[in-house]
Length: 121
Image (tube, rainbow, N blue to C red; front, side):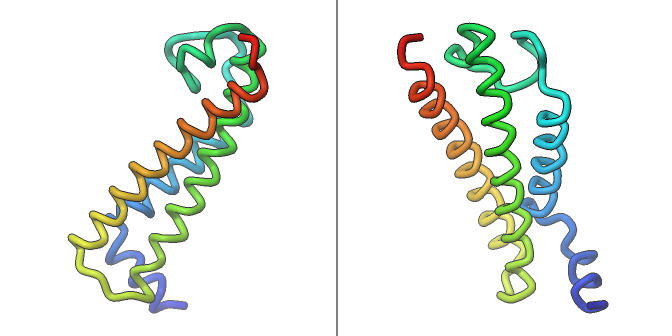
């Protein structure tokens, strides 16, 4: 256990680890304190999510859950470096790639869910 903690301390700059923690914390904040009214500052803000209060409320909760899932995946993949010896460059590219794919996943899945649950809007 001490070796794992030492390894994590040496590689704390891993993109996957840091962004995974940030995504998990942000998603928990959004789930606990979702934005009540449509705004341009805080929450999941796209034209489809801002059409009315009902789509706004749905998209805030749905996107927060997806952000939590992506955060868990990013956090889990940050431990991959323990099992597979990767250079810092490989770890950086893997982390950035997963971050970009995770953001695309969150956006696409949330937009599809809005269209599926609110087809007439």
